Length: 402
Ligand SMILES: Nc1ncnc2c1ncn2[C@@H]1O[C@H](COP(=O)(O)OP(=O)(O)O)[C@@H](O)[C@H]1O
Ligand SMILES: [Mg+2]
Image 1 (spheres, rainbow, N blue to C red):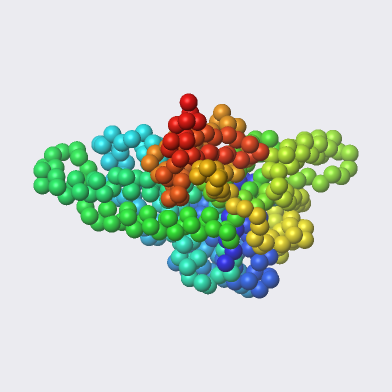
Image 2: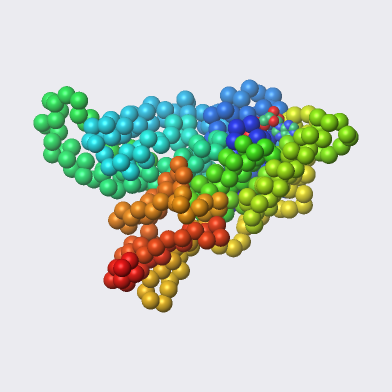
């Protein structure tokens, strides 16, 4: 089962391109689901669906063309209340316990119910075996990254703090129940958090697996490109595989109208930067259409033109974003694709079997494979768009540090 995620700044054409790609897949006879995790749903509008958008927010996807199914996740329907409970509890704990700053920061990235529900929905669909292709129309860049980081962020909290708190709470409940201002979760809250974590972990595995890829949608404007570059770094940091860039709404060269010629020249300049910002990735371009591309036919035409003969469902070969290789002296090197990052922007800290990596405003807690967790970090560098972290036997690392 192939999973394609589309993200990018607001308004660049994510929904349009996601809808078009899904429509192409369905025309090939593949069982295709297109699902939106953006609270600003516009898939139904893009397909020019007769029903209002809310008709697609139900429990089951709706078939809108042969083999093409649409679902717009609507959190209001279910879930919102229980998520709100969990969220309120987590934040109150944060406040009351005076948590480690790393954890505190992670806690502040808890997304809204809508996004969490969308991820859980995605997991259910992926497990159902009903689909050959799932296309995900994601929220704008920053939210998508936060969302994708959630399972790890919650995992940190759960593994470190929850067991301790649970024991503490059991022991102290009789006393604390009478003290004001101390948050006292019931066992049901703990159970809900633990279950949620397991489910989100599955989502992370699913979305960082070999058949899932992310496509960055942009328009040829400097501001948009800058955000796409940051998103690329962030996605790689979190272990997701980006397999292409879509430059949408490119003005076709034409007459000598100075307004148009000005735009064409300006866009061409940005497109040159695009090519340099994402080395090794295909950049697919889509022209600014004379009218809004609405309806299955128009979207199919746009997508066919965009991919220009390339297979939009191809699974990229080569290595994923995170690799570990052993060295002969018993050490190891972990390599993480980290495009557009400079060493000075990358911060590393060790926290037990986790490596805390910060790049700009993104932070990742990478759980080290067992063989690495035993070793010490001996050094790090950024070379050719790749972060290399050297690990050594504890004794060797000490020698190296001297
Ligand atoms: N290549 C294109 N040519 C003309 N209009 C486009 C093109 N791509 C998208 N649009 C229009 O731009 C608007 C925003 O697109 P949309 O896909 O909803 O963006 P996003 O999902 O990124 O917010 C929509 O009205 C859409 O029809
Ligand atoms: Mg959209």
